[in-house]
Length: 323
Image 1 (spheres, rainbow, N blue to C red):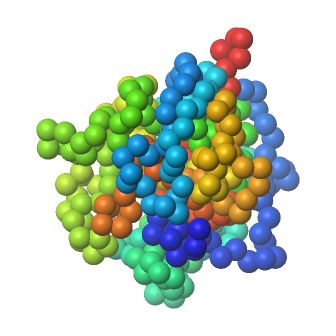
Image 2 (image 1 turned 90 degrees about the horizontal axis):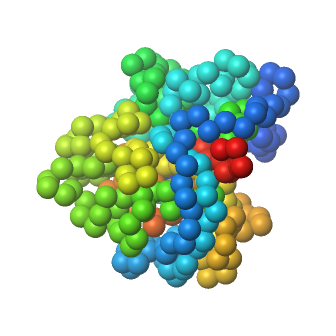
């Protein structure tokens, strides 16, 4: 996958070679806490058809072939991790995110809140992404912004490394890509979106994506220009919120566009290695004119250290005899 194609969803971070190592806490590592299923729903697992059954996926994303997958029962968060939850983690561990360590992160051009001296350029092939010095989870639009009033919005500017560190601290893990798609579908098979095949049933928006002329004018018919609170719209059939749009969510798997053709049928965990990790769900910037990736089968990816203003995550967990 080219950097330019990734940039339409979330631009990769050009991490300095000298600092391209996983982030740490003030104690030198994120200690695992006892297993916790707080805020999670237990899903029964079973067999489902994974992949794009409508022929709408981008060939380079590898959404096919549709293949049968069997999953063991598992737990998954009802919502994406919020600013408030991430703040608790940072206070407890001293975690410094990749965006903070590298000194900048990508912000959508219409909402940059920073002095001109903090504007470091735009992303190749995606000029709507501006690299802003000092943008990170606490200051998502730049130095002149903060998350006041957004405690229940999804935390953003989160790399795969950051998400993994949080999950370990919380006694959880990241979902596999197969778990994520199964959970996002909400039960019924073969649908385009978590709620059905129509984007706006009854003329109502069911997710936070772009309306209008991308990337210059958003009519905000769905109520939001950037992130929405994590319990906006309606949950799917499994009780999960916002599995389409709002923010991209990291999965545990390495990404490969050819993986579905060789994936094991039982509890697939992704390729053994790679250069990018899987992202799922789309974001508030998705629009069918350039990024129709808010469908439940849609895939994207980015490098593990990358962060930007529409990258977040939710956690999963195994089911045990006591859960």
